Length: 318
Image: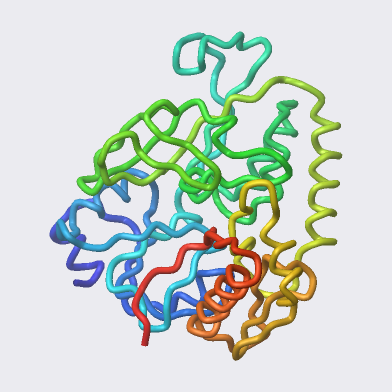
């Protein structure tokens, strides 16, 4: 079905629909297969209209910057919703008291509203510019708000849901819902709804204390410098591949097993940071997945620790 056909069927559809899209252009590993359909909504309202056109069993995948994702070489047989070009609203909320903000004094706190397609570092800089502190760590997360919410992304000792006071979700029928943190079970790099429902995060409100914006900007620069110094940012990668096991670090275990530099095809365990797998050029999704599996097997055999993946792998093998 073409976009024109959808427009005739559902008046007001304004986004961009494409077919058999090479997803390697939309994930930070720069590898992987195609998706049957890719939709870039014009805005949240347009997304709601589009979702209503899909069949009830249609597989749906929301993608921001693709920084924590690998789509296998056989492709994803469903629809990808690309958010980072569309859901980009970012603003300060007006001061208000009430249970939504936890009854906090608006003189001491501020609230930022950010849609799912906003890059996490942009939220950090926006907060500091408005003399709000506590979001600096978001500068170290190479993804969007939607992804940060879905996996409780974190770094430098902080996690996304520490500062969330409310979220917006959208369901398969295009209905938008307001949810509270108590509606979710939030843990280390994982978030689950308290009850069975198929919804996706489309926005969040972040509650932050007022403070020294200049100091926050300095902290952001420091964190970014640490990231540049310790991570292979000059090569395509997906961030940390594995979660840190309790009381330890995945990178330490991988390096202790002598796996730094291990290569399969065009994929390599980074020489700079052992919990990163980089695309040296021409890596396939199969190369990357096989390398992930080899690291898992080796670390478990030598240390007894079974590493848990932080990256998401979807789609079909060739």
